[in-house]
Length: 404
Image (cartoon, rainbow, N blue to C red):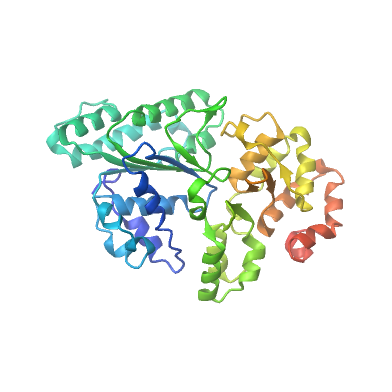
């Protein structure tokens, strides 16, 4: 068992036996279905605190040769599937979290070399019979050699793949180097049995094209078959409310509103905290300041501020998300900013009608914090007098909404 190669299952074990656990194991049926096919490259993007790492930990625990995870899946839905025993702990897994290699700004210029160095070190320990790999070897070369020598492929699980694009927003050169590294690692590589990447942003585009076009993308604007795995569904939340003695209707009012392929999805972080503390308030947005939202809205492309005011009054705003370049700096229109806010979790996207809206009371509070400034002129006063805003969120009190 290594740190990056054939890791253990401790992270998934902690989630599995927590007081609040929602079974998302059927996601594995989706990855098993594309194993060693042309569609074996998946990039799954969703907002922070929406269970990205938990899913990556679960897949690692399921596929990795470095552990025995049978008991962790005992009683879960996936255990009943025919493909479950076929792949359980039978594969070489390479897993890393990009964020761990970007813990400080000075690591930006060296993090790719560090990833390669640390993974190759683990590979050397795992495959000593393949001889020593010269210092400075490239990861793809080492993997080619192991595959040629042993005929064994690898399952890749990469968490927070887009961390660089969020941390080094203006560093175009290092962003390109990173994309080139990933392209070289995956494109045309026979040693890749499955590649599963998580992030907040979909894969960076240049013009209309993805920089990693081998990956099938699953996002809030195009979830395909994975929508129900992006968060807690209404049925799952209702079941947890019954278990923990919490009012489902109040949970719904505070945290519902993300509509993904017709499925109502809740933020797992907020739901879990409300179940734990038996108190309804803003949990998810408390993990960051409202400045992250404010900086984008204040750009005010094409009447963006007016669109925000309209959404606070319950009006949906039509967008065209397909032109968004999947980064945090390339904005040419209101649509680009609103599409980014969908990926960040501040807006819900109705794909059928190509419209966005503010999903729930929790996120409404965040928007109200932004508009409550002199830059917004008399708009805040108008909102404070708006009965429509209160009506849209089930008669929430002015104190809860932060107005009045």
